[in-house]
Structure formats: C-alpha cells, structure tokens
Length: 473
Image (cartoon, rainbow, N blue to C red):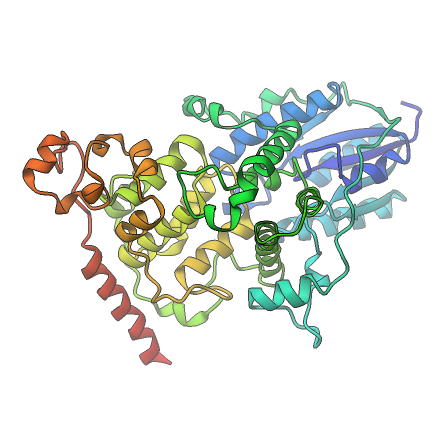
C-alpha cells in the first residue's frame, strides 16, 4: 500500500464518536484501525469470562461501524505493531490511554520503540473526565478522600472537554493478509451459558446511546433516591458500555448537564466522579488490586472456607437478599450497586472471607469488570481502602432487603422458590413458622437452604476481629 497510513489502535474506546485518538488519526485521512487482544501482559488479571463475551459483541458492532475495516490481532502489542509497520507505509500511530499498571509500562515501551523508527506516536485521553495527574492537592499530593477529590480537585480543575463528532471523510483500510476473524479470538464460551445474558443487553456504540437515552427518560428523574431500589429501573446500567468505551464519560457528563440542574443530575455526575476517584487510586497505587491500602488490615484474621465461598458464589447462602444479588449476577452479568454492597459486606464481614475472593469472582462474572472500580470498590467494602466504609459498618442483609426491596419484587424475581412467602418472612425465611413455610411450598434445606451463618453471631465475631487490629497498633 503506497498511501501514508495512520494507525488507530482501539483498546477501551470501542466507538467512533468522541474518540480523541481516532480524530487525531483521521487527520491523516488514510487510517488503519486495529484491535489487539492481549492476554499476555495482564498476568492474573486476564479478562474474565463475562467481559470476554461482551468484548466479542462489542468488537462485532465496531467492525460493522467501520464497514468491515477493523483489523484484529492476538498477541504481544509491540511485536504486532512492529510487524504492521514493516509491511505498511505507517507514518503515525495513535491510541487512547489506559491506566492499568501493565498497560502504562507497555505503552511507554511501544512509544520509545516506534519513535526510534521515526514514527509519530501520540496518546490521548478518551476514558476519563480528568487525567489522574491533573487532580491534585495544592501541595502536589494526590487525594485520598472522595469528597475533596471531587469538589475541590475535579470541579476546581479545568472543565472536561466537549465531546467530539465522529471523524468524516476518512479512508479506512484493512490488513487483509494478517487480520484475524473475530471468532479466532475465542472470546465466546464453549458451553454457551451466555445465551441467557443476551436478552439483557444491547452491546455496542449504538446500544450505549439507546441505553443512555432510556436512562435520561426513565431513571434520571428519580436517580438520587431511586438508585437504591434494585427492583426499579432507576440506575443507568451504563457501566459496561462505559468500561469498553462504547460511550465516553464526556458524553454522559454533558448529556445530563444539558438537560437542567437538579439533585438527580448532580448526584449522577458525582457517581462519575467516583469512577474518576477509583482511577486516581489505581494510578497512584498500582498495587491496589492486590494490597490493602490500610496496611493494618494485613494482620486481619480472615477465614478460608471453600464451602462458604461456593455457597456465596452460587446464591445458596440461605439469606434471600444475598442470594438474589448473586443470581442476578450469574443470570445477567450485572448486579445492582446497592446489592453489590450488601453481598460484599456479607462476604468479608459475616463470612470473613478475604475481599480478594469477592474481587476475583466479580472480575470473572461481571460484564462491567473494571480493574480500578473493582479493586477500589472491594477495598471500600472491606474497610481497608481509601475513604473506605468503616469495617464496623456491617450491612444486615435482611433489614437491607426490607428497606430497599420492601415489596419483595427483586427477591421474588431471582429467588422464585420462596416467592410465595408473605413479605413478613421473605427476607428471613428461617424465622417463619412451619405452617407458613408449608403454605408457601418452602422446605428449608430441601427447596431453599437454611442460613449458612448466623447474622448476629457473625457480626459480633467480625467486630471482635476488627478490635484485635486496634490492639496491634
């Protein structure tokens, strides 16, 4: 190919609109858009099964948007880029930055290597409203508490850039010789457990736009308070679209800001701020996915019980609100945020299993699995992270269910075997009289398990374990 080619390397920016690196690449008119599936450098954080499933469909959507002109590869990015450069008349390479520690190291190597060959290389911000290094305290240190991070750091910084239109008059090219077929990546599971998830999602840039509009119409007017009710359609469910870059945070930010100013909109924007805070934590603490930010928790007396962990994973704990959440996750690849806090608190505080177990399970089963959000979220739940929920704040899943699922719609949807129980006992079936269970066709330990742990006793034991840390200080 004789034309001067510009490479746009798609990563977590699987969209054409508001894509800064693609816009920069398109200035050269002849663009080779590529995607490299790299599961070599991420070590134990290789993409989970649910995320791989989403990625397959997102790439298919992107490939259609590019009218088939997406070149797909599998392997070491530096080797693949060098091979493309050797075969094409490449003058420039563009990509949007990612913030996982191994990507930062790899990007630096790639930039140095390509620049040494005389190739223009440029990265851009296509994933965050504010780069982590632009949000600091006056003394130059990074924020460790969310509220000042967001109110002083973010809102006091330069306003986010306006969203960009898709580039026009671009001639996209394809590596016909070496590009793989999407199926060659083997992202879909061999046993097709994913078929039950398809009905819940419209994957791709177009689906993200549709979902955002649905949220604006249905969820945003009730967001501040309604987002805590898992049976109501008031959360955005945009997290997987946002993670894979099918829609940008800038599009969301200005999309809601353009409507009006009320508490629902401001609260939604602050939730985008929490995402920024998680990325800041990961950027300044690369060991966030593995190590407690509060080192005193290194001495916490965790249990190690495979049967308790499996019961939690399968939604067979005998605690209906926990089981509903874990089954929602398994059936849809998603879990309502309020319920994530409930099931997380139950795992690390009632069962006293290490937060690593929860983070790994979410990493594998969530379609919105994101290293920054997942790691920061579990450290928050466990009480060992930045600006974390205090360890002694232990959610009672029965009372949480009564408060946020008062009519039992959420539990009855995902735990149908106890659906006939009256509301009084739906959240704690073990308290029901025998005739109540019989009338509801519930047989404890046969049709539905008894609790795997006593909520009151396990709470007291967790608090005692936490007190043991104080004695060590």
